[in-house]
Amino acid sequence: MPLLWFLRDVLRLTGTKYGCGIGACGACTVLVDGKAARACQVTMATAMGQKITTIEGLEGDKLHPVQQAWIENDVAQCGYCQAGQIMAAVDLLSRRKRPSDADIASIANLCRCGTYPRIRSAILRAAVLSGGASS
Image (cartoon, rainbow, N blue to C red):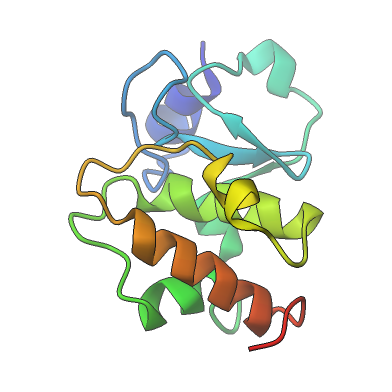
């Protein structure tokens, strides 16, 4: 069973979305031991013993800097891809405190609404909010 279906159907964590089922779109992106992974391509056997973080796992007393930046930059349009986009951005910012445009483009999550310029702006803003870049 793919991790995606375990998260959605067994644990009822529905923030992680089904997009394509072949690992191409990124709607199902979660963090596996802190690294972005397509949940539709991760088997339960592989996930066992790993720390899995979904969009629901970013909850806390306040918004995660990436979530705050998403709101400030009004990124979401239809919103379907946003959980995966946010999780991929969290991974990127954990590796690159000052991401370049090429770093951001390398995420390669798809957005059918075409909000890529706002996604880019939000990731750069999240870097500032996280203390990794200057405004």
